[in-house]
Length: 144
Image (cartoon, rainbow, N blue to C red; front, side, top):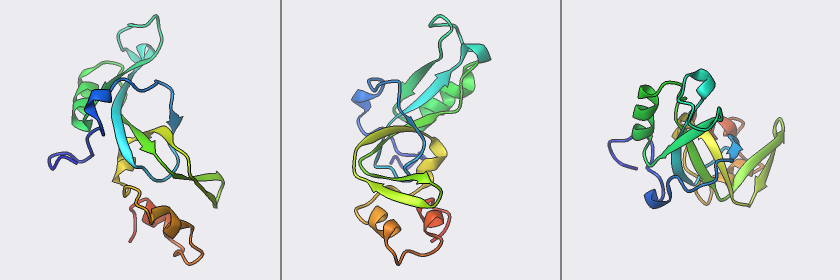
């Protein structure tokens, strides 16, 4: 992470803008890397109609670039982070957590990056029978 940034820069800036537009939305609780920051533009909300009425996005390597573009562009939304999850926690039913060991790419509100990055012990500690009752708040960075 750049010391002047509140969020990490993209893992590989040469790949920014090359990822598929479709991604999972939110979820997983943990993240491994930021691939890019996206600013979605909606013609229905005043963005330029660049693609025959379809929504579109611009990709950036840093949150600050994306945030600046978003603030200056009509019809643009707040930046989202495209994150890589090598492993994640699924919650198909409330309170029922499953450790999923497969790669996925998801769009997250950038604020979710304030959660700790996944380490080798993050998910096993969360799934442990001896995990504290506030384990979800710990994972979300809301408690210690």
